[in-house]
Image (cartoon, rainbow, N blue to C red; front, top):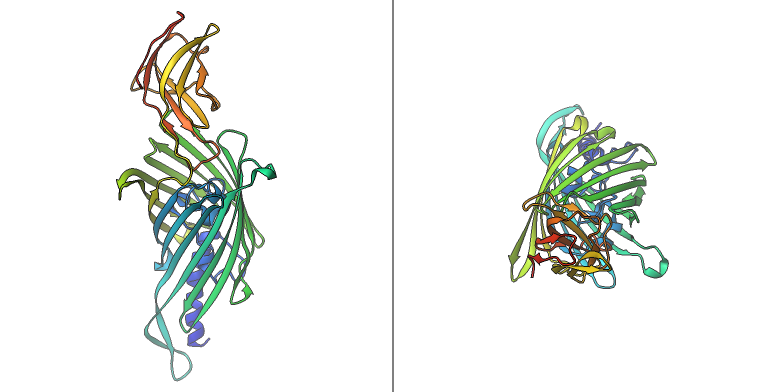
Length: 424
């Protein structure tokens, strides 16, 4: 084998390690454009790569472009990953909602394989030592779009999207160009908190005009639920079906407190089997005269025999692209037809009501399903003194954050009158 062939073999071997860690693809040619298959985003990594049925932030561009149709905020994100064989991976991403068109997104990535010793051939045609180093890198650009399905199609709660992936790979003594297309769908099922997602990836992916990546499918689902007014849990599971790879499944969980701190854990199967874990912090701030949220996420994962990978991501969310919910207020008790009702003022599409006998205390929901009017019957609540929080929601817009009322103290008793104090 000549020296140039040896150098190319080493470079391709590194690419194969990166591609294998990302997708566990085992078919021929998967090394030709490793950056076409490397996943982006730290939050998905912390959840074991189970994100097709979640896809609710800038990472949807890679995991399921159909989820972009539910992203209603402008977000700038920067990710750094310490990857395999001394390689590093940087990603700069952006989402931009456009009225009437949905949400567009773009991401620029750079995968650097590190320095590799250059081998030379001796006079006898055999190995003759080394002469400096060579480097290799992939420059990678992804653009995508997603939007909810038009109402006339009758597909309520379904959003669709697509993405185009372009890659330029610089090798020692040459270069390659590649392209790949993906399509996705995200469906908010009628069951509260449940979503399902579908991704068709690497549709016609090529390098230098030759097909090198097999098409694969990902199917996933997620379930989100509140654990009181300020706690939330998200569970997700994905399965991957490739034309030339064994099926694999991933699962993950995220627990969020006070919309500020999130802890994550997950498990991957397949050739890159192993646990993952992560954490995130969300900090709302006033900046440049506007309201923004800073997001910092970290994830680490074992990838089988390939070892540990670590990722860090900074995100800046510039408000919302859709409607902004107002805080519910002016809560009162009213008696109608012998029953007592809690009423309040607000213009949100839906609400949930939580009560607690003490403050601070554990708040429990008295509305198993969101109500669409600012009114709820208190007939099943025993007489007593309670602290009440009303949460404004927009179920059709997952990117729109819920808004809690201030706690209001009320006395619920059999007499036809009751007093309310608190939010005025």
